[in-house]
Image (cartoon, rainbow, N blue to C red):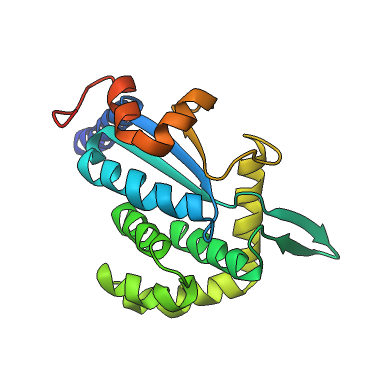
Length: 208
């Protein structure tokens, strides 16, 4: 019995180690963006989406929906202000709630964000986008999250992560490759993310 348990635990550890090694070889793409920012929408729909779909095995994407927002805690409650107004704060919170929803697969989360960023109104578009990934049953939960304290907390936490890059961001979206910000790489990625990924990739995908 002990031998079987040892083998089982060893298999789990080996699997976790192998996944970590695979992730270490992936190009890390972090995107600090806003839900209603035209440049964010263009980058995510025309640059990030095709790269993620075509080179999925070669990239690891981190999405941070906050941008040039501000967050201050007053009397125990977060006061959140977004560059494009209250609708953008709600859109940022919707996406924050999606990204933290453990019942959604990572692929579902990415497709939902891509879908939402292609729409004009994130609130009205949510159900349409959820239908595309066959997760319409998550709608009420995500909306409750975005409208309540959890949504505020999540957006504030993304604010903290954003401020570790720049406070405030000089441009939205800000794109960080392999955990290092570089203005020249940012400028190139805005117009040709695939070229950046192919250049810095350790194991170049065949489509490069």
